[in-house]
Amino acid sequence: MYARLRLDDSALETLEPPGDFLTTVSEDDKVTLDHYTAWMDTGGTNAAYERHADVLRGQGFKVLNLFKARQMVKEHSQTNPVTYDMCRSSCVSFSGPYRDLRACPLCDLDRYRLDGRTSFKTYQYTPVLPRLQAYYSDSHWAELLRYRHQRAQQACHAFQDGRRPADVSHLFADLTDGFANSENASTFADPRDCVVYISTDGAQILDNRRPSSAWIVLLQLLNLPPAFRFKPDHLHVSMLIPGPSNPDNLESFFWPLCAELAMLGEEGAPTWDALTSEWFQLRVHLGGVLADQPASAKLSRLTGHTGLYVHHLLHVAEQILMLGSIRGSSQATCERHIGIRKKGLSTFRFPYGAMAHRCVLRTQVTLSRIRLGMDLAQPPPDPPKLMLSFRIGHHHQRVGDSQRGRLDELLADVAPSRSKVVAYGVFSTERGERVRGLCCEQDDSRSSAVVKFQGAGSDRHVGRISQFLAVFTEDEMEAYAFLERFETEETSRSMDVGRWTGAWDLIRADCILEVVAALHIEEAVYICSRSSVQDQGELGEEADDDDVES
Image 1: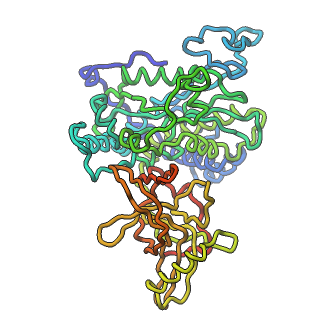
Image 2 (image 1 turned 30 degrees about the vertical axis):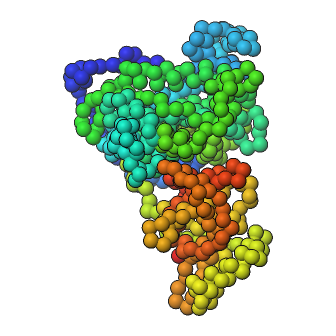
Image 3 (image 1 turned 90 degrees about the vertical axis):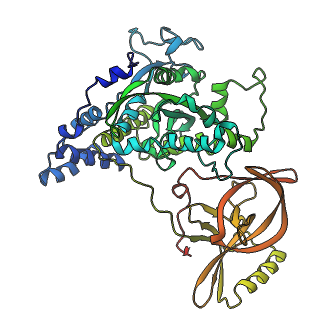
């Protein structure tokens, strides 16, 4: 895919700085790019593009037509997808060891049509190197890409190279925070080295249409902070594998990606760092592969009666200790990205080609804006204010009679002069986490009702919230949480083991510190702290009309 790109330090010093894109781009080109971006964001038609372009032209801007706008974006992004042949039954990709075959090695179907040159079916692979070079070409993004190194250094200091226990104040919030980073610190010779994670999953492109299933392969850049890493424009779509059948040999489709990562990990590529105004040899390393069970089975082959046996229960605490986080979710990330990109898709006859084309165009737009300094890295928004939402109604679960009596006693103590009490099911913390009480959750559903909260003094406790209460007095409103207390019987560095006591208490909602994970195994309950690395505000419910700001 690439010629030999490895250069030593002396050769890098002789390279001339790259040309400044801004000197070759006019204001009309920037207006065209803004217009083209807005047109893509809204899913407009070709006629809509020209109609709105005419409005801008009437104001004196020389907006390019759609064809020339696409050519301009492609040129500035320096991104060109590579087309590979594949089996028409989606068995294998004719790449790597299969590149010279004329028929599928699994189903024996012909690769080419009667002319012997035209393939029956193809897919596109988008290299990741142009994206990384675009980030480093802008000083704002180049500085952000130091995030991984900075967090990894903190982990190294916390573990002190494994010779002493970790610093008790060390937070396991991201994949950079685990012990594995301190063990592998020597792998990353340059703070600018990049680490990527592969996420893959199957998804439907068109709703309720079986023939439109496809496999998407995303790259997550660990160098970016979580506030940017999971944004759709910064998830790199490496390929979209057409269906409708699932790929039998998924590894063959990964061959172009693995070949590029192997080359970038071993050889590297000369890249301009706008932050330090120098050339350096960019190296990219694979951190891991995130996938659900079907995809994991295809990649690891550890399944079925002929597969290798592996223990099904991984110790959660040890995984967090080694990796730093268990929040990497392949299925949710891939399905969410497909859902965003397929909005307004109406090409029912060729859904794969239309979807792949959208992903490539979006990548080219994003990288063009970064290279031209039009898409600066903005800090994440301020955390939302404390808020109660999801008012508990007659159709929701109610507290039992015994808990009701206990709640009345507690309310009499904390607010004897209360004028009104309203029950709510959801509370948003200062950190942006949404806590859901058990009254609006089913027992078998994924819940966020278990929390760690600040007790008297500096003590921290764990509780399971039933509901939230807005307690009104003549002068103010206070938010409280009605919860069942947890008794810790054994504790470790990152996990507590104990049981629910059946004792109920009422705490101020602003005493909630974080949502924690609770795992029930027979009579024992395992509590594991976790820190959110994704913007949960984007994924949570919209506030109700009767939301209360506390």
